[in-house]
Image (cartoon, rainbow, N blue to C red):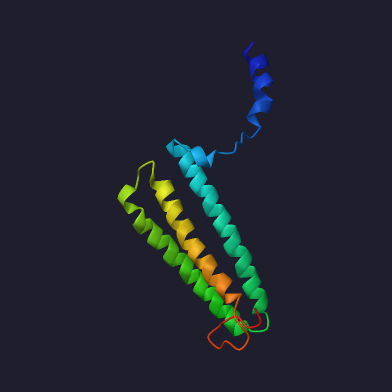
Length: 133
């Protein structure tokens, strides 16, 4: 009897359960953490899209592209360290993922704005590192 029961449940074991969190009305910590992670993912996706656009503009300037890569790696190191510090007051707690994700998202959104400004440079602007944007 137990074998039949297990066989009947087998398809459920291989089915992933996903649901969309109601972020506007989140009232429990798990949902708030999930919503923060979703916002972080969206900001990171936008950042990566802009990064690709900038690298495309730098295709004829390998030195500038190398500098961008170095700057981005340093920025990621800073972002992660800053957010670990920022969330350290709640380390180990259930709110930690929310605080950490919100910090990551905020800093990523600021970097997105920087990248957007790079892509809006006016021709002849010598202070702009992204020519022909």
